[in-house]
Length: 103
Figure 1 (cartoon, rainbow, N blue to C red):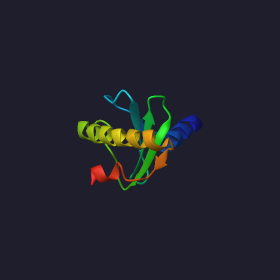
Figure 2 (tube, rainbow, N blue to C red; figure 1 turned 180 degrees about the vertical axis):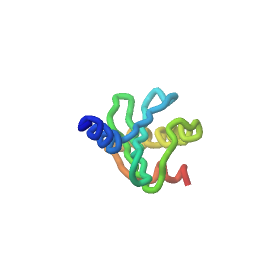
Figure 3 (cartoon, one colour; figure 1 turned 90 degrees about the vertical axis):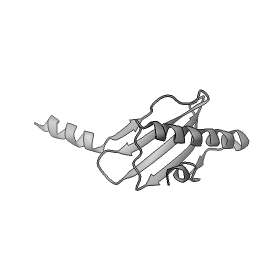
């Protein structure tokens, strides 16, 4: 019985990560949302070497990782993040690349 309670607690605290395809060949993105808790999404963009190049926190938003519309918008944001990465080689955070596309 104890292990069931532990498993339920663990499942409730874990996040759900969606990393659907297709994504551009020169980078990828990851959506992190919490199953139970406040509506919040973290989107991370990576270059082709899996280095974090951009991260954005979206409060009050849950993105559907299975939606083609979401995929298109995130791929567009990824291309913008990759250009910014090429220009300065420093990871950035919360510049509104994703939020502007989902308003």
